[in-house]
Image 1 (cartoon, helix red, strand yellow):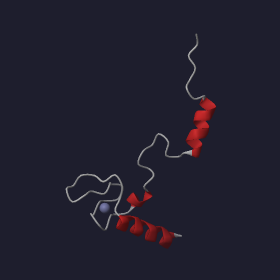
Image 2: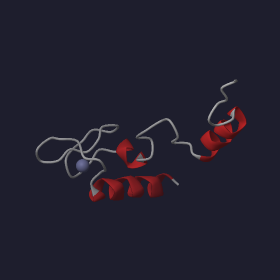
Image 3: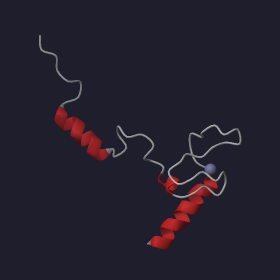
Length: 74
Ligand SMILES: [Zn+2]
């Protein structure tokens, strides 16, 4: 009995192309490119709560800052 891959290589490649974030976590938060005006998290670093534990997301004000930056560059 031959074991076959759960997902064919072609399908795996297609899935990776359709989902850029597939296999590379934390690249779906481009707003991390800018410093967070809320918690002062440095670019590339995740936002932190007052207790200094990492947030699963980012502060809304950081997203706004990033959005403003994007708007200024385009
Ligand atoms: Zn923050």
